[in-house]
Amino acid sequence: MQTELVTAIGAAATAYSVAAGLTLLLQARAMLSRGSSRDVSITFLASTSGGYLVWLVYGIGIGSLPLILADSVGAVCSAVAVLVAVRMRKRAAGPEATPRPPSRRARRAQRLREDLREALAHGGGALDLAEVMSVPLEDLLAARGDPRLSVGRRA
Image (tube, rainbow, N blue to C red):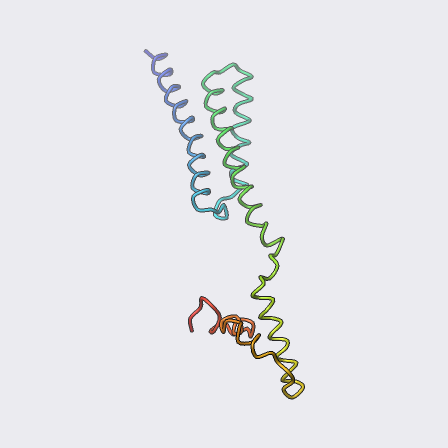
């Protein structure tokens, strides 16, 4: 009777350990659906991976199939969660590391802004009115640097 109870507890513990390992895949799915891993500690996920690996090595050492099964699943799932988190952090850092060049509209508006400043500084000067009129007002205002008047924002 006692060995049956111990066997049942061992089976329950193995099932619980496998389920706990699989929950790390839920964490990876949540990161992918949010598009961010900022609110997840990579250190925690890595330490979880280390714990599963230590127990896996121990299970192999003593020849315990339940430990080997549960910790193999946990190690693989935690490694997946760590890889997802690390890749998302690298992807998030990418655009900041390599800024995009200004668009053609932004360069044109900047050039017009500089021309306007130069013309005003020299008492008027010759401005190409057709060129000024061909630039959308929003671009001119955005080049001026007034956030209340730029495209997509309201005062």
